[in-house]
Length: 112
Length: 115
Figure 1 (cartoon, rainbow over the protein chains, first blue to last red):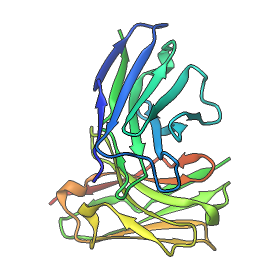
Figure 2: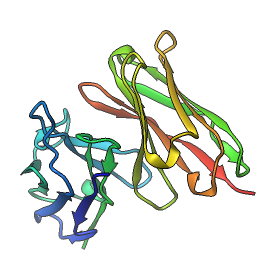
Figure 3: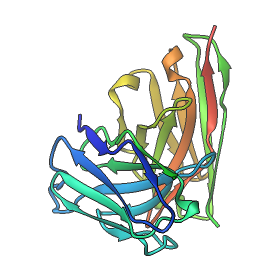
Figure 4: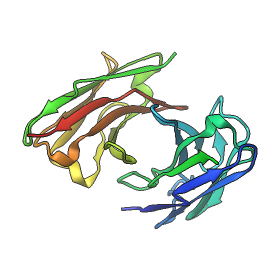
């Protein structure tokens, strides 16, 4: 199975400051069709997960442009340019290039 | 507005069975890959199973193979998860999630396996 490793697992951030979360895959996430099936989800406290990013870097509709995704192959990054209070929660990377699909362990973002 | 409403969770003894349902509205259900994702109390997300739009393909995480069965009824816009031989470690909030042009999630239904 593909193992996704996230770092850090805990991320205290000052409001207005940037934040970055790394996601590393045990295998390349480039599928046979050339697409990279790597997504990022946000789960706010007490809420269901919400997708932020698909195909490494495509923001979902309604996602603020302070969120961006990047990466290729096995190394990926989610960046928040200026953290706001509403960004508190747990962030997961997710791959569906291989079966079984897998989530990373999650990174808990909190405000300092 | 897209809505996914799960039901069917509850308290069950080890070895028992449940059938989870997910009623979908506001999306073209018959065009969506449908997934079940679970989250044990205080833990992270675990992808459990999915099925393609016409239900002809079904995939599972290894830990549930042979015990869980995913199915769908496109005429009723409903997704199912039959869960048998339940174990304590299956205790979790089970989410239904649709992947179309976007990703939609329900609020989850809680399955508690305990004697």
